Amino acid sequence: MRRRLLLAAGLPAGALVLALGAYVAGGGSSAVPTQRLSEAPFVVKVRAEGVLKAAESTPVSTPISAGSAMTLAWIIEDGSRVKAGEVVARFDPSDFQKMLLDGRGDEATAKKKMEKAGASRSATQKDMALDETQLLALLEYAAPTPFGPATRLAA
Image 1 (tube, helix red, strand yellow):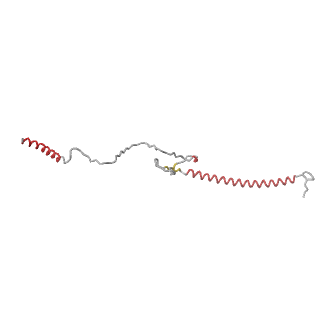
Image 2 (cartoon, helix red, strand yellow):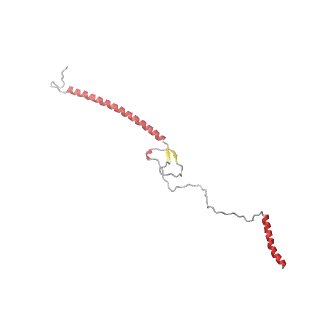
Image 3 (spheres, one colour):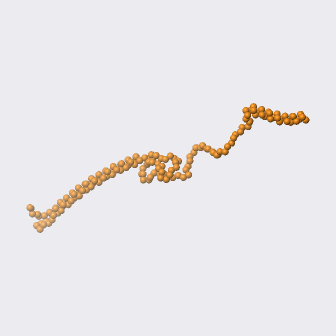
């Protein structure tokens, strides 16, 4: 019985010694990999290519009064948020500046023509007044007299 008792006590002790030997021989780490966990926010990142469509958009167009094609000098970056009244595009003013200068030149030419026409009109009016005076003198000369239709005394 003693032998059985020694065997019953020695078997688990031997298994413990073998396990401890395997643990020390393995460098002190267990054979099962482990990981420490901690609480963190759940984040999912997805990389994809595509085209975004705005939920709300406002069409921007050129002024109707422009009358001709307009060239963009600058435009805000696509997809930018803007507020009411904020500049989103600038047009190249060089075409309009040329049109303005041409218009001013045309205006000056028209004014000179009007001044010339006014001076010509004034001269014409003076000529007409002189002609009227001469015609009245001729009418008076050609008027009938008591001595006959065209008889005048020589002075």
